[in-house]
Image (tube, rainbow, N blue to C red; front, side):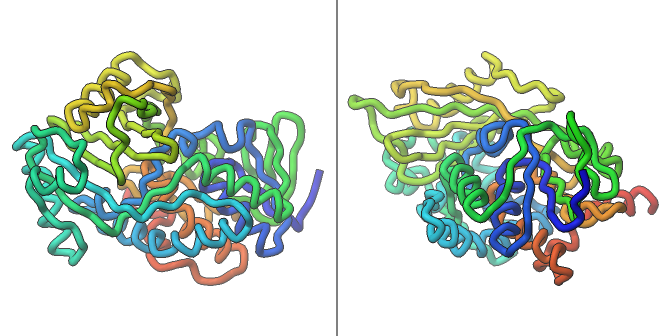
Length: 372
């Protein structure tokens, strides 16, 4: 089957759906390929933090810049989705970062100093001050940071909203697995489809679909738990809590209705998506040491997802050799980077300049470094 006027998007996680919605709204004829749209990828398992500042680390300035570019787009992105009739649940409550012991506090001091040198807002506070902001924090918490500029979003509400908005704008969804891409031809299990343009947004599976990404992406497994406060327990925190517990990162993100998302383990396990007993134990033990009330919460879900990691934590945003636009490798920041990635893809489709910071995320950067 040949169609040289439409746009194909491979992958229906948050990146693919964001591009599909924006492209369909801009008047393109959009077809999205994914055997498990919305619920099948890492976006469904995400915590929903939109936090470039608290994700920052020395040496990753390009990651921070791109994240902040996208964060500035998030309020209008969410407002546009709400105007379509679907609220993605954007929260402006900010982030509390907690250090459990003295070694963890030392790591936060490094982060605070780095952010201060860059002129970013992150206020160091004592454990006592931190507990005034979030009374449910454990007395053993040593110190922390207050980061008021971070946002959060209900990832599942967002995915449902993007899916519905894309369909409302005319996007077509094909629940088939893509076997490969070749010069704007999408090969599925049953047919070949020719398009004017193709956007590859298949996350950790992208490297299997295009030879130029082979060896540049790796799946990183992350497990999350969902819990719900009971009548006899303290409610979830008012905003996002990120913590270091004896060097291990953990986050607690509140949801409506007394729910709490707890994550996230991270390790390399290939494409294995099973939840392990050790992962569940690690998350619960860490969370209980930071926010003791979770021990009495109802455990409602345990899931694992596969993030797509790059060597330098920047995604791959740009044109591959045969005219396919790569929109993949977002690691922990898929939800955060959805607006700027969608804007970059639309700029490419229109032949316009991409947003600031996007050029440094071009897929060819890794190959160029290998040649030096």
